[in-house]
Structures are given as structure tokens and as C-alpha cells.
Image (cartoon, rainbow, N blue to C red; front, side, top):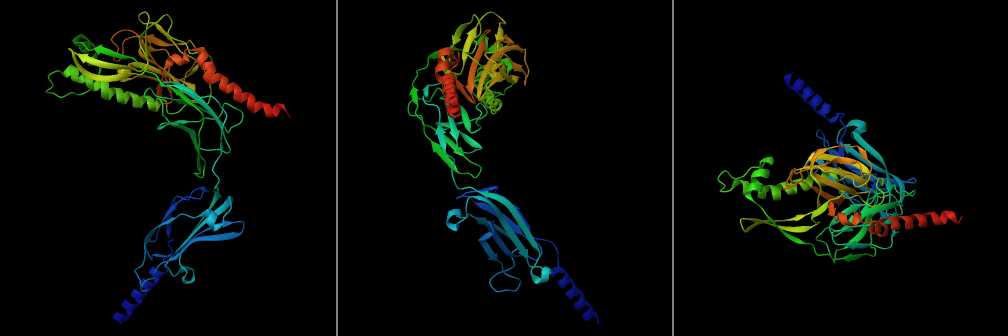
Length: 451
């Protein structure tokens, strides 16, 4: 009697296990778009009775194209044990399979080894609406002349045949994103670009774009690069300077250093400088798609230049070279605590103490163009505030690594420092920026005017 009872209990337990109702799990990323080279990775699992089958298909216009129809071993079958989890990767050849561009449904069906559904197993079905897109975008370059000077800026205007979430201009290994919004046609993009002070002849440039499906294309454009030689300078680091400035910086130096102030200076000049640049990159990562500025950029009034853009500095201590760095701005000296005007209209995006730069302000002028004001005494503005050209943003001082009261003024195209002198020159702005924009405006308006 006990044996019979145990047998009944065992059979009940077995039957209960085989009739379990938990559906298989499916995870992974099914894309909204599918192109000719898309790879789709899925993970399927069933912890109880195991996976019976996986079927993947694309349904379009009443036609089903099967991409995968796999069956897995059942318990006790020869050829392998029950599979409880599997990684599935498919890369459908859309053109070879005869699938057309347009809307479709991506179908996934996974069954387990349960005896539910009349021994067909529990079923998980995913039907995801997708768009098949195998055609790369087309790029039409609208701006004609692209003359850039080493360390300087430029503008490229182009049109895309369809929206592309990633598009812009490659300059060497640096990407400058294109932004729409200036022209009425949303597919016309402005891309402000820059050559950093090290990039000269031989720097490759091209436009690239990738659509939602990942189809990519490149387009070249005519450009000319003018090389430039930058000045070299020698900076003598004195003990009085070290005693005056180093207490401002919270950095660690070896406890057994024979000259802790000099070691601190070197760490600040190298490591803190690099950290400050990363903070600037973060602050300039996004830019409004509005051109806030107009005309030439204002310069600190009645100020004498004290250092130029991309000056190569050799630092000397007691007659011995201790470091080398490059000066990525223009130093302007006026009277003590001189009021600093905003160089042009824009939106303030940064007001912080910034290491070697001291109290600094960054203004977004739109489409990736920024101005930067450093070594300030205090701030007259705050992040998010809109300013007009010549509004006072603060006052000059000696914060940061400044030996004397002055303004360190920089300009950037996204994360690249460029020579501010170009933006102080109305002729350069006209020839390289505004004339290009006006030509494209006229070309876009011309077809409408002839109707």
C-alpha cells in the first residue's frame, strides 16, 4: 500500500512538473530598424522544462520569411540533454531574402517542453513592428569654399536626403556634429569645424552620416589648409610665484620631496590642466541649435596682449627646464579688476572655479561656438542666463595660475580651442561664415521664387 501511495505521489509530482505553466523568457534588443548588415542577438531560457523550439520570422505584406526554425532535444531523446538557455544571433541578408524596404513585423516564437497546450508547450510570442531600410542617405554639400588656417575655424553646410541621428564632419580623428534648425528645411545642417593648433597640411576632412537603420555614407568637400607657425616663449618660475600661487591648489605631492612647491606646480601644470580640459569638454558637449551671435566678437576694451594663442611655453626653474605646455587662449591686460564684456550674445553654460584657469565663465553662442573668460575676480552671471554682447560677465583678477591681473580669453568649436583673432575680424567672419550662410539661403529660396 505504501509503495502504491509513493507511486501515485511520484506520478503526481511528475505530471505536475510536466504541466507547469511558466512561459519561456526572451531578452535582447530587437531594433526598430533593420538594414542589410544588422545583427540581432537574443537570449531565450526556460528554467523548468527547457526550450523546445525557437522560430524567428519577418512578416511583410502577408508574406512570412523564416529566419530561424530550431528544435531542441526533448528529455530522454538521443543526441543531447534538455537545453535550458540559448544565445541566438541572426544577421538576415535582407536583399537576398527578397524583403522590401518599408514596414514589417519581426516575429519571435519560443516554446518549452511543458505538456501544456496539448503537449505543444508554453509559448512566448513577440511581434515587434520594424522598418526595413537598406538605402544609405545621400549628402549634398551646399557650401562651396572652405579655407581653414591651422588653429582656426570653418563652416560646412550640407543637406541630407533623410533624417540621420548621427551626422557631422570629421577633421582628422575629431568629429564635429552637424545641427539643423537654422534653415527652414530640417534636412539642411550647419557644422562648425576646427583645426586644432597641431593640425596642418594633410589633415583629412569629410562629412559622414548614419540613418536610423545604421546605413552610413561619407562625402568629401573641397578645402584648403593654411599652415601656421606659433610663437615659442620661456616662462621663468620663481619661488615667489610658487609661494604665492601653490597654496590655492589642493593636490598631493610626495612627502619626501626636496621641493614640494615645485612638485606641486608641475602636478598642477600637467594633471590639473588635463582635468580642467575634461571639465571644459563636458561643459561644451551640447550646444543650442540657435545662432545667438551677430557680427564680430568684442575684445576686452583698452587691453594690451600679453600672450598669444598656441604659444609654446617652456617653463624654467633656476635656469633648468622643468616643463612644457601650450597656451590655448589670448591673455589681455587692462586696469586692475577691469570689467569683462561678453564677446557676443549667447547663453551662459558655466560659472565655476576651474583649476589653472581660476574663476571662469563659458558662453554658448549656438551651433557649437563657445567663448571662455578666465582668471576672473567674481561672476556677474549664472548658468542658463542669456546675455547680450557687451554685457558685463565679471571682472579681471589673478585667480588660478595667473601671475598678474588679466583676462585669459579663449574660443572653442565644441571641444577644440581655436584662435580668437579670427572672431575679432569682421572680414574673416563675413568671408568664412556669414557669406556662406547667405549663399545657401539664396540657393534654397531660389526654386520657390521661380514658381
